[in-house]
Amino acid sequence: MPIYTRTGDKGKTSLFDGTRVLKSHKRVETYGTIDELNSIIGATVAHLKNNEKQLKVELEKIQNDLLDIGSALATPHPMPVIGLENRPKEFEKCIDNLTQKLPELNEFILPGGGKAGSFLHVCRTIARRAERQLVALTQKEKVDEAIVIYLNRLSDLLFTMARYVNYMEKKKEIKWVKR
Image 1: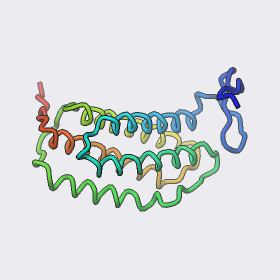
Image 2 (image 1 turned 90 degrees about the vertical axis):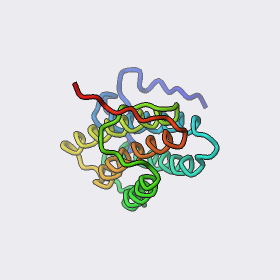
Image 3 (image 1 turned 180 degrees about the horizontal axis):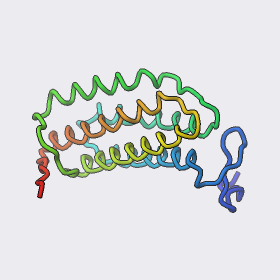
Image 4 (image 1 turned 135 degrees about the vertical axis):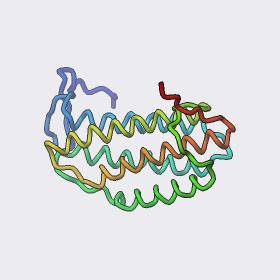
């Protein structure tokens, strides 16, 4: 079976229930950004060192979550994502655990560091864009609110992971110099 269907050649796509919408529809844009985030997380995992196995495992769990979220968003009727409501608390525990190992942060830092840390900062910004798009979608359509909470906490986790990876790889955080 070929990967192409030609059904999108006129700028429309199908949601899971068969509804045809423009590819520029806010719902499609939102789950497309979730897919983009999932892909960049996969690239990030490829740059993690072998001693960062715990982060790899968590990032792969997040990738699975994101596929579930994308599926829920591709359905025009509110569809809860099973188990998603527990994930923000799990993220908070992970954030707290990693933060205990890091120097205290009292100033803004510039995104960057090593490859994996830099990729995690990119992941964070894409997660925030997905969250903004999702919030805009919720103004017009019903969406499982657990997804909004998940994405909000996910960006915090990705920021902390970026700091942690850079710290473990001895990459110095560069403080923002306000002009």
